[in-house]
Length: 191
Ligand SMILES: C[S@@+](CC[C@H](N)C(=O)[O-])C[C@H]1O[C@@H](n2cnc3c(N)ncnc32)[C@H](O)[C@@H]1O
Image (tube, rainbow, N blue to C red; front, side, top):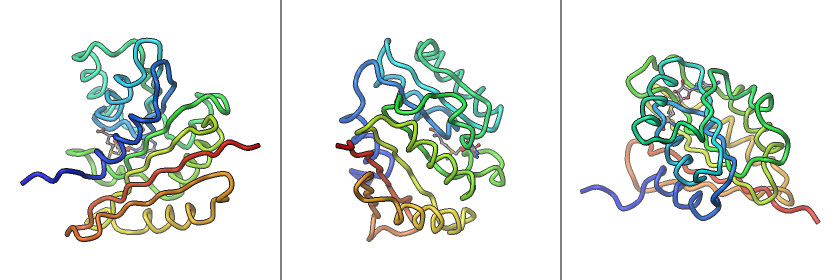
């Protein structure tokens, strides 16, 4: 039986509520382009998506997927680490940033996201987000991914100023095999 809700679906549902036509979004971990395509559809013809990965194979797979769905015009694919994200977007111009941590499915498991660069990218994302913008984060853990990145990111999330950011962490508590955590960070409006 397929489950009614999973980490990705949960995060996509809340992004759907907060991203409007014409929005500017960032996919910080492009992979095979499924999240990039999801964002491209949401932002519409007038919107823009910046999508980043460190592996040429990710850009090739994503370019092919976008072409198939005729979405290439609204997406910029960048071969660079998300820890350099602030070179590609100005402060307070971004509506949403998606992170799907881990490694490229079917690729080299050693080329996975790492706590240090993930947290650097999250710090930048907070600056780039518009007020009421959202960061979504799927945190994989267990197996060959281990727990170090999860623990470091959860520690970093805990110390965020609650007056400036709201952090929601969803754990599929009774499911086996370490299902990914779904995290949402909302940047509150400052008075
Ligand atoms: C779980 S996959 C992402 C899945 C993807 N969002 C999709 O829809 O298919 C994680 C991706 O993060 C990439 N990655 C690892 N370190 C990175 C970094 N510093 N900056 C950007 N991407 C990175 C990996 O190459 C891998 O493709």
